Amino acid sequence: MSKPVQITKSLHAWMDVFMHRSMRGWGRFVKTTGLSMPQFSILMQLHYKGSCGMSEISERSNVTAAAASQLVEKLVQSELIERTEDPNDRRAKQLSLSKKGAKLVEQGIEERHRWMDELAGNISAEESGLVVEALEILIRAAGHLEEKK
Amino acid sequence: MSKPVQITKSLHAWMDVFMHRSMRGWGRFVKTTGLSMPQFSILMQLHYKGSCGMSEISERSNVTAAAASQLVEKLVQSELIERTEDPNDRRAKQLSLSKKGAKLVEQGIEERHRWMDELAGNISAEESGLVVEALEILIRAAGHLEEKK
DNA sequence: ATATAAAGTAAAGCCCGCTTAACTAAAAAG
DNA sequence: CTTTTTAGTTAAGCGGGCTTTACTTTATAT
Image 1 (tube, rainbow over the protein chains, first blue to last red):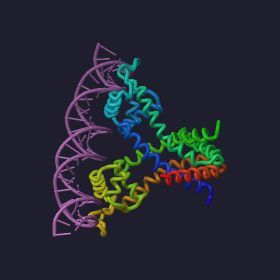
Image 2: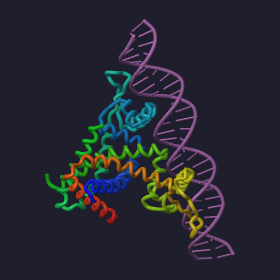
Image 3: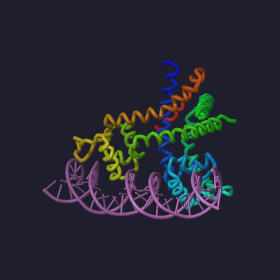
């Protein structure tokens, strides 16, 4: 089999295995938090992209400003998000994770990593060097894709 | 850095990149189909696990029989699923993907693979052999995990 | 100074997923 | 043959996400 086909096949196979497993685990975890997916997504957004205003939230979540406002309201009620007035623009709000919110996100990320840890346990010491190298290549390749956009 | 730590870190980093990207793409795709997540999940289930009855659907989806029945009803109305009587047990129904449903699932899988294809384009020929090897190791390791359960 | 635009909120209403409860029909058990 | 269990459906009702419309408040442009 030619190289380009081979790597494509391998990546596809990995994708199938990975998605199947990770999606289910993720959904299960989010359910345990008592939050809905859209709500938890906002927490994740704040974690990865940092504090921001309502407008960014609504854009990134692909919903209207009204919808974002409602979702955020619930998260503020639950004390997972802190909503303060922007001193430079009194119309705007600054949203950020509270300590409680940050903790929950941290738990989510750990949950996502748990399966990877189990996986690592099934990889021999000899293999692991190779896998580490390959993952670094993949991560770098993914980074290049993002840049192009 | 010791090997066990190193591979764990690499797997975590890859997980983060992968999840971020794949989840968003998936949600976006499902939206274009006009179906809800739970509905599309049932189609995926039928694709991966094959034809089955209502009870299996409701168990795997973690919802009551009533909920499963309603979801399936919509998919039957949309002609994505065929629902026939089980000849051996006239209480039971046999659910299977219609041609239309199978096509939609196929599109979904292609969509999931598309990013992998782009990724492959950013990996040099020299690197690709290594990546293929590593992915095979990972897929095998994942398989071993499933067996244990 | 006035008009316009922007950031966010409130309310009404829709659709959807989900549950419980009540029901039908067929199979299995006694 | 009757009783009980199993497979699935139907209907009522709750809660959530989302949209549209209308509104308030603050900033910006003319």
